[in-house]
Image 1 (tube, rainbow, N blue to C red):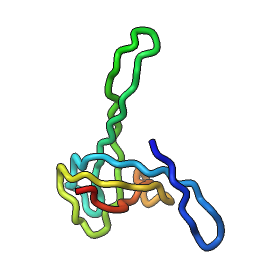
Image 2: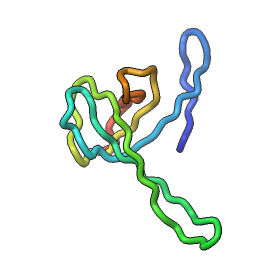
Image 3: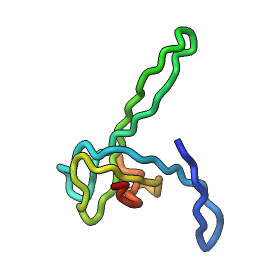
Length: 90
């Protein structure tokens, strides 16, 4: 997970920035993005993938399944959405 500091008028805010692949775009103004992270087991030293899905706000509805996108955290937009799309990583 990469963290980035964004400048605002009032103060500096730390916002998490993630990137992943769109796995669903069936909802209005919302996409589901899957983020994969590699981890190492502490005892057996085997690498494995941890996948997590995030609901991300896509106001224009421009992203399709399979697109790579970057997104940052924001204020709560709905019950499950706390992220918004920044740009496409084509």
